Image (cartoon, rainbow, N blue to C red; front, side, top):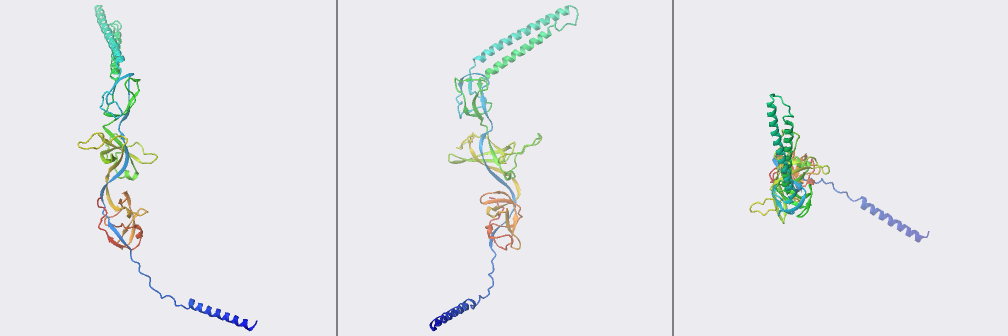
Length: 398
Protein backbone atom coordinates (compact mmCIF):
# COMPACT_ATOMS: atom_id res chain seq x y z
CA UNK A 1 0.00 0.00 0.00
CA UNK A 2 1.51 3.32 -0.99
CA UNK A 3 1.86 6.11 1.53
CA UNK A 4 -0.76 8.13 -0.34
CA UNK A 5 -3.47 5.42 -0.03
CA UNK A 6 -2.57 4.75 3.58
CA UNK A 7 -3.11 8.41 4.35
CA UNK A 8 -6.62 8.41 2.71
CA UNK A 9 -7.66 5.26 4.61
CA UNK A 10 -6.61 6.72 7.95
CA UNK A 11 -8.49 9.95 7.20
CA UNK A 12 -11.65 8.03 6.36
CA UNK A 13 -11.45 5.95 9.54
CA UNK A 14 -10.97 9.11 11.59
CA UNK A 15 -14.10 10.70 10.09
CA UNK A 16 -16.16 7.58 10.87
CA UNK A 17 -14.98 7.47 14.48
CA UNK A 18 -15.70 11.16 15.02
CA UNK A 19 -19.18 10.86 13.44
CA UNK A 20 -20.08 7.81 15.50
CA UNK A 21 -19.00 9.52 18.71
CA UNK A 22 -21.03 12.62 17.93
CA UNK A 23 -24.14 10.54 17.17
CA UNK A 24 -23.78 8.57 20.39
CA UNK A 25 -23.49 11.76 22.37
CA UNK A 26 -26.64 13.21 20.84
CA UNK A 27 -28.75 10.05 21.29
CA UNK A 28 -27.58 8.76 24.66
CA UNK A 29 -26.24 11.74 26.35
CA UNK A 30 -29.29 14.09 26.17
CA UNK A 31 -31.16 14.61 29.50
CA UNK A 32 -34.48 12.68 30.14
CA UNK A 33 -37.87 14.44 30.69
CA UNK A 34 -38.61 15.69 34.17
CA UNK A 35 -41.33 13.63 36.00
CA UNK A 36 -44.78 15.38 36.16
CA UNK A 37 -47.94 14.60 38.15
CA UNK A 38 -50.89 13.28 36.01
CA UNK A 39 -53.67 15.86 35.41
CA UNK A 40 -56.67 15.56 37.69
CA UNK A 41 -59.80 14.29 35.81
CA UNK A 42 -62.90 16.39 36.41
CA UNK A 43 -66.26 14.63 37.06
CA UNK A 44 -68.60 15.05 34.07
CA UNK A 45 -71.55 17.39 34.54
CA UNK A 46 -74.92 15.74 33.92
CA UNK A 47 -78.51 16.97 33.82
CA UNK A 48 -80.95 15.14 36.09
CA UNK A 49 -84.65 15.25 36.84
CA UNK A 50 -86.29 14.17 40.09
CA UNK A 51 -88.67 11.26 39.66
CA UNK A 52 -92.20 11.93 40.88
CA UNK A 53 -94.32 8.77 40.47
CA UNK A 54 -98.04 9.47 40.08
CA UNK A 55 -101.20 7.67 38.90
CA UNK A 56 -101.70 8.04 35.15
CA UNK A 57 -104.14 6.93 32.48
CA UNK A 58 -102.02 6.54 29.36
CA UNK A 59 -103.52 6.62 25.90
CA UNK A 60 -102.93 4.04 23.19
CA UNK A 61 -102.69 4.97 19.52
CA UNK A 62 -103.47 2.56 16.70
CA UNK A 63 -105.08 2.52 13.26
CA UNK A 64 -107.86 0.76 11.42
CA UNK A 65 -110.38 0.82 8.58
CA UNK A 66 -114.05 1.69 9.00
CA UNK A 67 -116.42 -1.21 8.32
CA UNK A 68 -120.22 -1.57 8.49
CA UNK A 69 -121.48 -3.40 11.55
CA UNK A 70 -124.05 -5.27 9.43
CA UNK A 71 -123.69 -5.96 5.69
CA UNK A 72 -125.81 -8.44 3.75
CA UNK A 73 -126.90 -9.52 0.30
CA UNK A 74 -130.52 -8.48 -0.13
CA UNK A 75 -132.32 -11.31 -1.96
CA UNK A 76 -135.75 -11.90 -3.46
CA UNK A 77 -137.80 -14.60 -1.74
CA UNK A 78 -140.21 -14.97 -4.67
CA UNK A 79 -139.93 -15.36 -8.42
CA UNK A 80 -141.10 -12.85 -10.97
CA UNK A 81 -140.29 -9.86 -13.12
CA UNK A 82 -139.15 -6.62 -11.48
CA UNK A 83 -141.79 -4.03 -12.41
CA UNK A 84 -140.57 -1.01 -10.41
CA UNK A 85 -137.81 0.21 -8.08
CA UNK A 86 -137.57 2.96 -5.48
CA UNK A 87 -135.84 6.23 -6.28
CA UNK A 88 -133.17 5.35 -3.69
CA UNK A 89 -132.49 1.96 -5.29
CA UNK A 90 -129.02 2.88 -6.59
CA UNK A 91 -125.44 2.51 -5.42
CA UNK A 92 -125.01 4.98 -2.57
CA UNK A 93 -128.72 5.41 -1.92
CA UNK A 94 -130.04 5.49 1.65
CA UNK A 95 -133.21 3.71 2.78
CA UNK A 96 -135.24 3.21 5.94
CA UNK A 97 -136.10 -0.05 7.63
CA UNK A 98 -138.85 -2.00 5.80
CA UNK A 99 -138.98 0.57 3.00
CA UNK A 100 -139.83 -1.21 -0.31
CA UNK A 101 -136.81 -1.00 -2.61
CA UNK A 102 -138.23 -2.92 -5.56
CA UNK A 103 -141.50 -4.56 -6.57
CA UNK A 104 -141.85 -7.99 -8.19
CA UNK A 105 -144.86 -8.67 -10.43
CA UNK A 106 -147.85 -9.55 -8.19
CA UNK A 107 -150.38 -11.19 -10.53
CA UNK A 108 -149.36 -14.81 -9.96
CA UNK A 109 -149.53 -14.35 -6.17
CA UNK A 110 -152.93 -12.67 -6.29
CA UNK A 111 -154.21 -15.65 -8.27
CA UNK A 112 -152.73 -17.97 -5.64
CA UNK A 113 -154.59 -16.06 -2.91
CA UNK A 114 -157.89 -16.44 -4.80
CA UNK A 115 -157.37 -20.21 -5.12
CA UNK A 116 -156.43 -20.46 -1.44
CA UNK A 117 -159.53 -18.51 -0.37
CA UNK A 118 -161.66 -20.95 -2.40
CA UNK A 119 -160.05 -23.89 -0.62
CA UNK A 120 -160.72 -22.27 2.75
CA UNK A 121 -164.39 -21.76 1.87
CA UNK A 122 -164.74 -25.38 0.75
CA UNK A 123 -163.08 -26.63 3.93
CA UNK A 124 -165.42 -24.53 6.09
CA UNK A 125 -168.42 -25.89 4.20
CA UNK A 126 -167.27 -29.47 4.71
CA UNK A 127 -166.71 -28.88 8.41
CA UNK A 128 -170.15 -27.35 8.82
CA UNK A 129 -171.73 -30.34 7.03
CA UNK A 130 -169.93 -32.84 9.21
CA UNK A 131 -170.96 -31.02 12.38
CA UNK A 132 -174.58 -31.02 11.20
CA UNK A 133 -174.44 -34.76 10.44
CA UNK A 134 -172.89 -35.36 13.85
CA UNK A 135 -175.80 -33.60 15.57
CA UNK A 136 -178.30 -35.62 13.53
CA UNK A 137 -176.52 -38.88 14.36
CA UNK A 138 -176.49 -37.98 18.06
CA UNK A 139 -180.26 -37.36 18.04
CA UNK A 140 -180.90 -40.63 16.24
CA UNK A 141 -178.80 -42.56 18.71
CA UNK A 142 -180.55 -40.86 21.65
CA UNK A 143 -183.93 -41.83 20.17
CA UNK A 144 -182.81 -45.46 20.35
CA UNK A 145 -182.76 -45.15 24.14
CA UNK A 146 -179.02 -45.69 24.84
CA UNK A 147 -176.18 -43.37 25.83
CA UNK A 148 -173.32 -45.45 24.40
CA UNK A 149 -172.66 -44.58 20.77
CA UNK A 150 -169.95 -45.47 18.31
CA UNK A 151 -167.58 -42.51 17.56
CA UNK A 152 -167.70 -43.33 13.90
CA UNK A 153 -171.49 -43.23 14.01
CA UNK A 154 -171.30 -39.85 15.77
CA UNK A 155 -168.91 -38.70 12.98
CA UNK A 156 -166.18 -37.53 15.34
CA UNK A 157 -163.32 -38.72 13.05
CA UNK A 158 -165.00 -37.00 10.11
CA UNK A 159 -165.23 -33.74 12.07
CA UNK A 160 -161.53 -33.99 13.07
CA UNK A 161 -160.54 -34.54 9.42
CA UNK A 162 -162.64 -31.56 8.31
CA UNK A 163 -161.11 -29.33 10.97
CA UNK A 164 -157.59 -30.39 9.89
CA UNK A 165 -158.46 -29.70 6.25
CA UNK A 166 -159.68 -26.22 7.22
CA UNK A 167 -156.46 -25.47 9.10
CA UNK A 168 -154.42 -26.62 6.10
CA UNK A 169 -156.46 -24.45 3.73
CA UNK A 170 -156.04 -21.45 6.03
CA UNK A 171 -152.26 -22.10 6.18
CA UNK A 172 -152.13 -22.18 2.38
CA UNK A 173 -153.99 -18.88 2.30
CA UNK A 174 -151.52 -17.38 4.78
CA UNK A 175 -148.59 -18.60 2.68
CA UNK A 176 -150.12 -17.07 -0.46
CA UNK A 177 -150.62 -13.74 1.27
CA UNK A 178 -147.04 -13.89 2.60
CA UNK A 179 -145.71 -14.53 -0.92
CA UNK A 180 -147.67 -11.50 -2.13
CA UNK A 181 -146.13 -9.36 0.64
CA UNK A 182 -142.67 -10.62 -0.35
CA UNK A 183 -143.06 -9.16 -3.82
CA UNK A 184 -142.05 -5.90 -2.10
CA UNK A 185 -138.35 -6.41 -1.31
CA UNK A 186 -137.01 -4.47 1.69
CA UNK A 187 -134.35 -4.63 4.42
CA UNK A 188 -135.11 -4.83 8.17
CA UNK A 189 -132.75 -1.95 9.10
CA UNK A 190 -131.84 1.59 8.11
CA UNK A 191 -129.10 1.30 5.55
CA UNK A 192 -127.34 2.20 2.37
CA UNK A 193 -126.93 0.39 -0.94
CA UNK A 194 -123.34 -0.38 -1.85
CA UNK A 195 -124.11 -2.43 -5.00
CA UNK A 196 -127.26 -3.14 -7.01
CA UNK A 197 -127.59 -6.26 -9.16
CA UNK A 198 -131.02 -6.02 -10.86
CA UNK A 199 -133.18 -3.41 -12.52
CA UNK A 200 -136.68 -2.96 -13.92
CA UNK A 201 -137.71 -5.69 -16.37
CA UNK A 202 -135.29 -8.30 -15.08
CA UNK A 203 -136.63 -11.69 -13.96
CA UNK A 204 -135.56 -12.84 -10.49
CA UNK A 205 -135.82 -16.28 -8.93
CA UNK A 206 -136.11 -17.08 -5.23
CA UNK A 207 -132.71 -16.46 -3.62
CA UNK A 208 -131.48 -14.08 -6.34
CA UNK A 209 -129.34 -11.26 -4.83
CA UNK A 210 -130.85 -7.94 -5.85
CA UNK A 211 -128.44 -5.64 -3.98
CA UNK A 212 -125.61 -5.46 -1.46
CA UNK A 213 -126.62 -3.28 1.52
CA UNK A 214 -125.22 -2.32 4.92
CA UNK A 215 -126.67 -0.79 8.09
CA UNK A 216 -126.00 2.88 8.77
CA UNK A 217 -126.99 3.13 12.45
CA UNK A 218 -123.60 1.86 13.69
CA UNK A 219 -120.13 1.55 12.14
CA UNK A 220 -117.20 -0.41 13.49
CA UNK A 221 -113.39 -0.33 13.33
CA UNK A 222 -111.10 -3.28 14.12
CA UNK A 223 -108.05 -1.92 15.93
CA UNK A 224 -104.86 -4.01 16.28
CA UNK A 225 -103.22 -3.90 19.73
CA UNK A 226 -99.82 -5.19 20.78
CA UNK A 227 -99.26 -7.00 24.06
CA UNK A 228 -97.82 -3.84 25.64
CA UNK A 229 -100.84 -1.80 24.52
CA UNK A 230 -103.29 -4.38 25.87
CA UNK A 231 -101.66 -4.02 29.30
CA UNK A 232 -102.63 -0.32 29.33
CA UNK A 233 -106.33 -0.86 28.57
CA UNK A 234 -109.46 -2.21 30.21
CA UNK A 235 -110.76 -4.35 27.36
CA UNK A 236 -114.23 -5.95 27.41
CA UNK A 237 -112.97 -9.54 27.40
CA UNK A 238 -115.62 -12.23 26.95
CA UNK A 239 -115.91 -15.27 29.21
CA UNK A 240 -117.98 -18.41 28.94
CA UNK A 241 -120.15 -17.37 31.85
CA UNK A 242 -123.62 -15.94 31.35
CA UNK A 243 -123.64 -14.45 34.86
CA UNK A 244 -120.59 -12.26 34.26
CA UNK A 245 -121.08 -8.54 33.65
CA UNK A 246 -119.12 -7.02 30.79
CA UNK A 247 -117.05 -3.97 31.70
CA UNK A 248 -117.82 -0.73 29.93
CA UNK A 249 -115.50 -0.33 26.97
CA UNK A 250 -112.85 2.37 26.78
CA UNK A 251 -113.62 5.54 24.86
CA UNK A 252 -112.00 6.00 21.46
CA UNK A 253 -111.32 9.11 19.40
CA UNK A 254 -111.10 8.40 15.66
CA UNK A 255 -109.32 10.92 13.47
CA UNK A 256 -108.69 11.14 9.74
CA UNK A 257 -107.95 13.64 7.02
CA UNK A 258 -110.65 14.21 4.41
CA UNK A 259 -110.85 17.03 1.87
CA UNK A 260 -107.58 18.39 3.26
CA UNK A 261 -109.08 18.78 6.76
CA UNK A 262 -108.80 16.76 9.97
CA UNK A 263 -112.02 15.35 11.45
CA UNK A 264 -112.85 13.42 14.61
CA UNK A 265 -115.53 10.97 15.79
CA UNK A 266 -116.25 9.55 19.23
CA UNK A 267 -116.64 5.81 19.78
CA UNK A 268 -116.26 3.05 22.34
CA UNK A 269 -114.54 -0.33 22.51
CA UNK A 270 -117.34 -2.91 22.72
CA UNK A 271 -115.60 -6.28 22.28
CA UNK A 272 -112.48 -8.11 21.14
CA UNK A 273 -112.11 -10.61 18.31
CA UNK A 274 -112.72 -14.28 19.05
CA UNK A 275 -109.05 -15.19 18.52
CA UNK A 276 -105.58 -13.69 18.37
CA UNK A 277 -104.20 -13.11 14.87
CA UNK A 278 -101.91 -16.06 14.11
CA UNK A 279 -99.71 -14.06 11.73
CA UNK A 280 -99.07 -10.84 13.66
CA UNK A 281 -99.93 -12.09 17.18
CA UNK A 282 -101.92 -8.94 17.89
CA UNK A 283 -105.30 -8.63 19.60
CA UNK A 284 -108.05 -6.89 17.64
CA UNK A 285 -110.37 -4.66 19.64
CA UNK A 286 -113.59 -3.56 17.96
CA UNK A 287 -114.77 0.03 18.35
CA UNK A 288 -118.33 1.03 17.48
CA UNK A 289 -119.44 4.50 16.42
CA UNK A 290 -123.12 5.35 16.57
CA UNK A 291 -124.84 7.35 13.81
CA UNK A 292 -121.74 7.54 11.60
CA UNK A 293 -123.71 9.21 8.79
CA UNK A 294 -125.45 11.80 10.97
CA UNK A 295 -124.53 15.41 10.32
CA UNK A 296 -123.95 17.56 13.38
CA UNK A 297 -125.69 20.95 13.40
CA UNK A 298 -123.39 23.63 12.02
CA UNK A 299 -120.65 21.14 11.15
CA UNK A 300 -119.29 20.19 7.74
CA UNK A 301 -117.86 16.92 9.02
CA UNK A 302 -118.14 14.19 6.35
CA UNK A 303 -119.85 10.85 7.04
CA UNK A 304 -117.75 8.05 8.49
CA UNK A 305 -118.03 5.87 5.40
CA UNK A 306 -116.86 2.24 5.18
CA UNK A 307 -113.34 1.99 3.80
CA UNK A 308 -112.12 5.19 5.47
CA UNK A 309 -108.70 4.74 7.15
CA UNK A 310 -108.59 6.32 10.62
CA UNK A 311 -106.15 6.87 13.46
CA UNK A 312 -107.52 5.83 16.85
CA UNK A 313 -106.61 7.12 20.32
CA UNK A 314 -107.92 4.88 23.12
CA UNK A 315 -108.21 6.03 26.73
CA UNK A 316 -106.23 3.67 28.95
CA UNK A 317 -106.84 2.49 32.49
CA UNK A 318 -105.24 4.30 35.43
CA UNK A 319 -101.84 2.90 36.44
CA UNK A 320 -100.07 3.73 39.72
CA UNK A 321 -96.46 4.89 40.20
CA UNK A 322 -95.84 6.08 36.64
CA UNK A 323 -92.93 8.43 35.89
CA UNK A 324 -92.53 10.59 32.79
CA UNK A 325 -88.97 10.88 31.44
CA UNK A 326 -87.26 12.16 28.30
CA UNK A 327 -86.89 9.35 25.77
CA UNK A 328 -83.09 9.76 25.50
CA UNK A 329 -82.58 8.86 29.18
CA UNK A 330 -83.23 5.18 28.37
CA UNK A 331 -80.10 3.13 27.63
CA UNK A 332 -79.87 0.29 25.17
CA UNK A 333 -80.03 -2.33 27.95
CA UNK A 334 -83.39 -1.05 29.19
CA UNK A 335 -82.03 0.83 32.21
CA UNK A 336 -81.63 4.46 33.26
CA UNK A 337 -78.78 5.97 35.27
CA UNK A 338 -79.66 7.26 38.73
CA UNK A 339 -77.30 9.45 40.80
CA UNK A 340 -76.93 8.04 44.33
CA UNK A 341 -76.02 9.83 47.57
CA UNK A 342 -72.28 9.49 46.80
CA UNK A 343 -72.78 11.30 43.48
CA UNK A 344 -72.12 8.13 41.51
CA UNK A 345 -74.15 7.02 38.48
CA UNK A 346 -75.94 3.73 39.12
CA UNK A 347 -78.04 1.73 36.61
CA UNK A 348 -81.72 1.15 37.44
CA UNK A 349 -83.95 -1.27 35.50
CA UNK A 350 -87.32 0.23 34.57
CA UNK A 351 -90.49 -1.03 32.91
CA UNK A 352 -91.31 1.05 29.85
CA UNK A 353 -95.10 1.37 29.62
CA UNK A 354 -95.24 3.67 26.61
CA UNK A 355 -92.94 5.90 24.61
CA UNK A 356 -92.93 8.52 21.89
CA UNK A 357 -90.11 10.13 19.93
CA UNK A 358 -89.36 12.52 22.81
CA UNK A 359 -90.98 11.11 25.99
CA UNK A 360 -91.49 7.81 27.77
CA UNK A 361 -93.51 6.60 30.74
CA UNK A 362 -91.92 4.04 33.05
CA UNK A 363 -92.38 2.23 36.35
CA UNK A 364 -89.67 1.10 38.77
CA UNK A 365 -88.39 4.44 40.13
CA UNK A 366 -88.81 5.79 43.66
CA UNK A 367 -89.90 9.30 44.48
CA UNK A 368 -86.96 11.69 44.41
CA UNK A 369 -84.64 9.46 42.36
CA UNK A 370 -82.32 11.68 40.31
CA UNK A 371 -82.38 10.33 36.78
CA UNK A 372 -79.67 11.38 34.33
CA UNK A 373 -81.29 12.83 31.22
CA UNK A 374 -78.09 13.88 29.44
CA UNK A 375 -76.57 11.87 26.61
CA UNK A 376 -76.05 8.37 28.15
CA UNK A 377 -72.51 8.22 26.69
CA UNK A 378 -71.39 11.06 29.00
CA UNK A 379 -71.52 8.89 32.13
CA UNK A 380 -71.00 5.21 32.82
CA UNK A 381 -72.16 3.08 35.72
CA UNK A 382 -70.11 3.73 38.87
CA UNK A 383 -68.65 7.03 37.65
CA UNK A 384 -68.67 10.08 39.94
CA UNK A 385 -70.65 12.89 38.34
CA UNK A 386 -71.47 16.52 38.98
CA UNK A 387 -75.22 17.08 39.14
CA UNK A 388 -76.86 19.92 37.24
CA UNK A 389 -80.40 20.06 38.66
CA UNK A 390 -82.99 20.60 35.95
CA UNK A 391 -86.04 22.76 36.42
CA UNK A 392 -88.24 20.11 34.73
CA UNK A 393 -89.57 17.43 37.10
CA UNK A 394 -90.30 14.00 35.77
CA UNK A 395 -93.77 12.79 36.53
CA UNK A 396 -95.49 16.01 35.57
CA UNK A 397 -98.32 15.73 33.03
CA UNK A 398 -97.93 16.36 29.37
